[in-house]
Image (cartoon, rainbow, N blue to C red; front, side, top):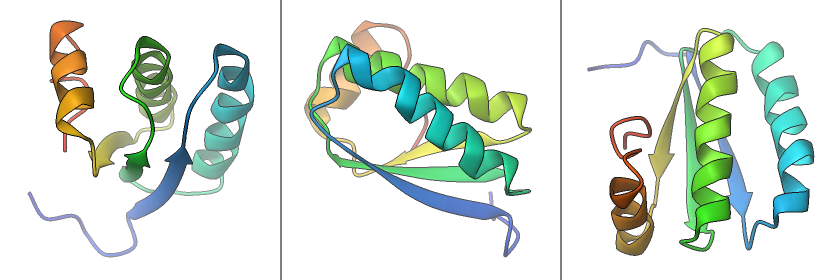
Length: 96
């Protein structure tokens, strides 16, 4: 589905992500989305680890995006990260 110009933003997450990083990451993305009217937020994840903390962070970001009328779509997810998200039942929640 095409995305209307100006209705998408992109942000990058670098890893590894520690559990202690989650509140700060959440707040930064909240601020980014609050200042935007984007329908889609592309999240670059090439440099994150494929682990449970990363999947937790991405799921939380999807929740905050939905609260702002937006959807997170991943870019650059490794096969390992995709497999882990599928194993955790979240592959449909965090689309490409």
